[in-house]
Image (cartoon, rainbow, N blue to C red; front, side):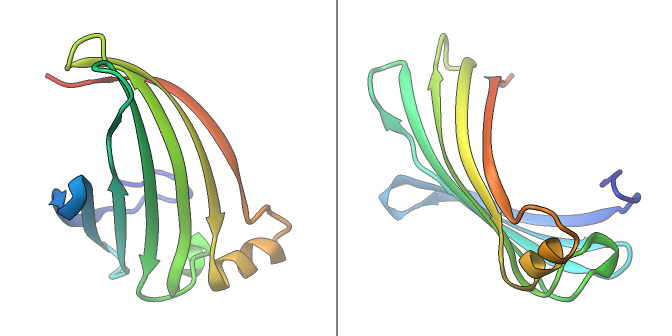
Length: 133
């Protein structure tokens, strides 16, 4: 469920798995209640610096299969994000992390953002706690 800029509900079908060369791969297709179809592709890989300190490069891109004027998205590749996450696994289930990433709009979506006077891309620094049960 997207709440902003207006409420939209999506049906999501995805596949997650380990591709060759130990690349964790996530592919998801989204169908909105308005009939808009999009997809997201993400890959990550864990690089063990020590037994507990892990560097995780990640790459994510989004694809829109039709224009969505309400959300200022054009058909084609809409954006890409690449970054590095450094985490320390206190236990396998608890790991604080620091993430640095660069995201940028692509193609016609970037042109739409430029026309509105918005930045096409930028850096983000995130900190958090990764956990699972």
